[in-house]
Image (cartoon, rainbow, N blue to C red; front, side, top):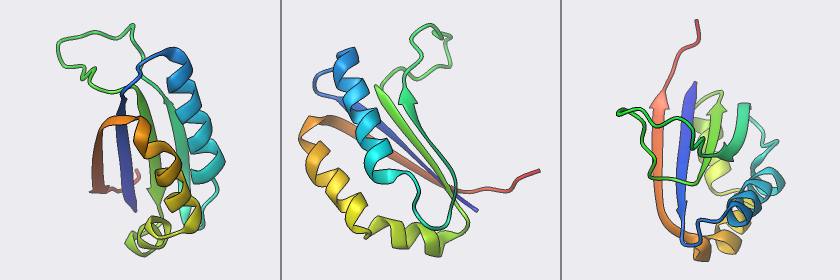
Length: 103
């Protein structure tokens, strides 16, 4: 499986802006073929341990059955529309892709 985790820092870091991006994730990024797990949400600001990275507002987590499903998702019109509509709101985006195994 391939884990695709995206962390967005917004230019406008308000709760409303965060929720707008989460809703856009749900609209455009949920339900793609080959996805075995999907979630989108916001930073939990109550967790402030030394190891917590607080440098984001919204997270998107997808697990694909394989790299081929990920590659199809990357060029899917809904994914491209998501980027086009939301990119102007992003201050910083970090992507973490990893091969993972379930237990």
